[in-house]
Image (cartoon, rainbow, N blue to C red; front, side, top):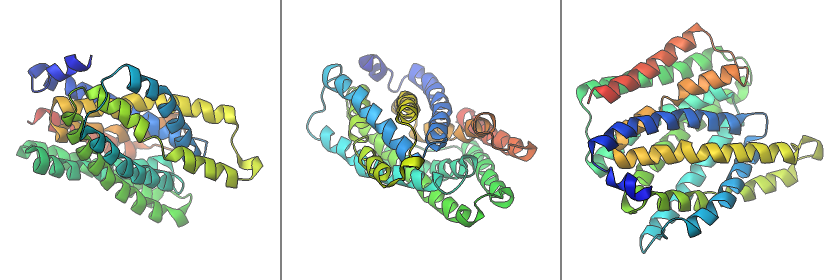
Length: 302
C-alpha cells in the first residue's frame, strides 16, 4: 500500500486522488473535534484518544511498516513539540467557548500561513483565481467567527480569550501542516511516518489527562466506560482526519490540500447543530456556503 501510494507522487492519478483525501479528512476532522469537545472534559477526551492511538498503533509501527532510518527519527521527534502546543491550544479553547464558535477560528487562520509556507519550502504557487478562492473561503470562516462573537450569549466572559487562543492555535495548524508535509515526503514509505507519528505525538496528553483526573472531584469525573468509548472512537477517526490529509500533501500541492481541509467548519457546524444541539441559522448557512465555494474555486482555479 505504501509503495503504491509512493508511486502516485507527481502523477495525474495522485493529483486526482489528493482532493478526495483532503475533503474526507475535513469531514473526519470535524467529527474528531466534536468528539473532543463533546460532553466530556476536552483535556480528558484528548488524553483518552492518545492512549488508544499509542496502544493500537505501536504494534503496527513495529511489525507492519519499515522502521525510520537516520535523520528520519529526528523529523518524527520534531512533530512532538509542535503538536503538543497545538493540542494545548485546542483544549484551552474548547474549555472556554462553544464548539461552533472556536472551531471555525482554529481552522480559518491556517490556510494562508500554510500556503505561504508551501511557497517558501516547496516552491508552490497559486493562481490569481485560486487566491480569490482563498479569500472567499476565509471570508466565510471569519464571517462565521464574527457572527458567533456578536450573537453567542453564553460564556461571554471567556469568549474573547477563547477566540484569541483559537487564532493562535490556527497559526499552529499551518506550522504542523507544513512541517509534517515536509517530513512525510522525506520518508520513503508514508505509512512509516504516519504510524510513528501517532505513537510519538500521543505520548504527552495521557499524562496531562491523568493529572487532571486526579485533581477533579470524584463526582465530576466522567465514567471510565464513557471516556474509553470516546477515546476509542476519536482514535479511529484520527487515523483518517490526519492521515488522509498528510497523504494528500504528499500526492499533490500542500497548499491546495490545506485549503480543502479547511472546509471542515462546514461539517463542524452541521455536527454542532445535529449532534451537539447548537443553534445554526440561515446566516451561518450562508457563511458556510462561502467556505465551500471558496474551496471549489481553489481546487478548480489552478
